Image 1 (cartoon, one colour):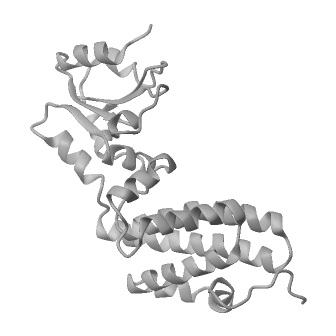
Image 2 (cartoon, one colour; image 1 turned 45 degrees about the horizontal axis):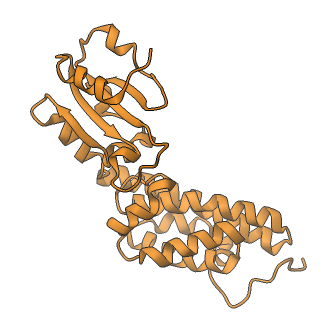
Image 3 (cartoon, one colour; image 1 turned 30 degrees about the vertical axis):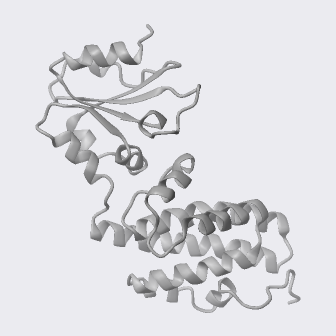
Length: 248
């Protein structure tokens, strides 16, 4: 069976158990489509919908991917789905705006949720930064470079969570920051620094970034997480020289 996007949407519009259609992915982002772009569609069903529709969950073709889900589950997506929903387009909403409100709510983390997640991500980011700086000090450039590149993901997750937003997928990162900059950060220089770290593993840019993150995290009430790093903290902070392979 091959299902086209337009035909599927037309049929779904007249199927009463379909309470919402939400387009996600590159087709929902102006200027992001290519000749390879398919249509990624959430098909949201009433909780008592017929099993025939539910069986289409996971359908994939060259032009159409379907996620078929009950409305109750759409209200509580997995964390990795939140950004996709945040920047999606609502095509059908048969619940008096409820589907639209769910989509809008995905873009803003609750204050308590964001605080807890920030604490976890801050510790993970500090750990991911400590590794490359330590490897640089110990004369292990390959580990230094690989760990520096890996730390970028923790950094971005942390920065967006501090702003109570889901972190975009890498494909949409530049676009997201161009339209919705992070408070206190100039988007282009920040992206250039992140790209430099991923490409080179240089220690000094990582330490300078950490200094800014440390200030923001302390201002947001996460001093205890940082202070728990104790005597390891100075290695992560910027200083005039971070020589490789310091003698023991």
